[in-house]
Image (cartoon, rainbow, N blue to C red; front, top):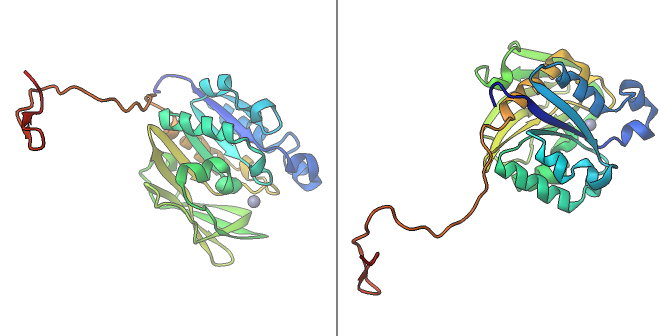
Length: 256
Ligand code: ZN
């Protein structure tokens, strides 16, 4: 989509912010608004938000039709996302839409649907330091970052992360407590690109971090579709005459 505006929809569950004062202190307008503000700094992106409690979970056909890249943060209410919405998002990714899953979205219906595995992991919430190592410095999502960057306080996610082997692992996290984690993972599904990015626990200002905003900017540009297409399964006529004889019928493959 070079030269075109990338239409981004930032989806937020938007429940912790309503119920938990500690989360509201960090994200008074909601995490989705912070993610939107970070992406909206880019002149090549138009960024809207959608949330769980809106009609159709905020993902109407009209919204989906105007979305090139969908980002997804959910945690406490994965089960409340309608299956029909998950079906629609899956179809759209297979047709070409980019999908970026953030942090606790590892257990979202859409992530598990797209990957087909359990997506379980180890976790610990004590506010320890996370160091994200850039293991693919040539990858588009790693541009503008150093050899590593750090977040002073985050929730720990540790291996084993039950995902199918990614096409690329861009970041590997190390945590102060000793665990490691595949923190930035890329997959292709159908014509669509998917990226999972680990940081983003609701009680830390991770989505205001300049390096995190750089990663999300890069990820949106990487995941933006160059092509949309359906997946028909047509019975098709040959381009050339087929002379081979089917031994079961004694006839050539194609009548002349
Ligand atoms: Zn978390």
